Length: 328
Ligand SMILES: [Cu+2]
Image (cartoon, rainbow, N blue to C red):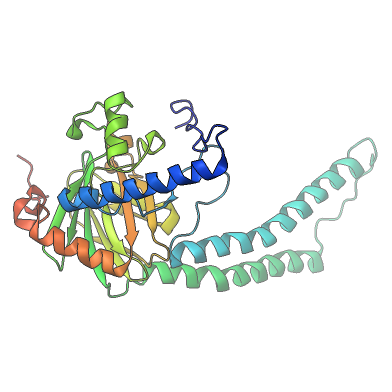
C-alpha cells in the first residue's frame, strides 16, 4: 500500500478552544454516534454488524517490522518459537562470521605462505557432527509441538467452509445453514474498478473503515466468537487460492476438489485482515479476507440475524455444489 495512500488525517483536531468545551463536544459526538449506530443497526443487514465497537488489530502497517499482534493461540506460539530461535540463530551466525573473518585474516597466502598439509582431525569432525545434531534436536523439541498443534485439527465450536474463487471468498457456516460471499470494497463486484476513488472511500467509511483499509476491507466479514475453537475448511472452486490471516498465524491453500482445514482460537475481540496468498490470476490482489472477532453474545445475535436474513444458505449461489471434474 506504500505510495498509494497518504497518511491518515490527524484525529486530534481540537483547535485552541477551552478543554471543557471540547470535552462537551466529544460527549455529544459520542452520544450521537451511539444513536446513529443503534439506528443503523436496527436497519442494516448483518453485513454492517458491530463496526463501531471493534478495534482493527490485524492489518499491515506502513514501515512496521516483525509480526502483526498475535490474535490467536497459534500465532502466539509461532511468534514465541520465532523469538526463541533467534537466541540460537544469532550466536551461530556471529560464530561462523567471526570464524570466516579469522581464517581470511590469519590464513591468507600472504600471512601464511606455507600452509599445513594435514587432511583429517577426528575430534574436530566428531564435534562438528554432534553439536549440530544436538542443536537440531533441541529446536525440534520446541518446533514439532507447535507444528502438531497447528496440524491436529480439533472438533470446532464453529466450523466454516471457505471457498476461494476468481476473485473473492465464499463462506458457509456448515452447521448453521448460513452462507455468503465476501467481496473487496471497491472491486468490480461491488461496483468499483479496484481503484481508490472518492466513491470507494465513501463506501469504506460507511462500512466502518477508512481509506487505510482499502485492499483489505470486504463488504461482508467472517464473524467468529472470541475464545472458541474455530475450524476453517479451505477449498477452491476454480484454481488454487490460499486463505491466510497473519495475525492468527494461519495459512492454508484451497485446492479444487480437496477440503483442507486449519484452526485457531481467537483471543481478542477485533477486526483482522488477510489476503489470498496463492497467485490465482489477474485479480489475485483484490480478494482480501476480513474477520471480525466478537463476544459470544454478539456472535449469537449476528448468527440469529444471518439465519433469518439474506445469509440463508438457500438464497445463495455459493450453496450450489461445484462440479470440479467438469471439463466442458
Ligand atoms: Cu486467490
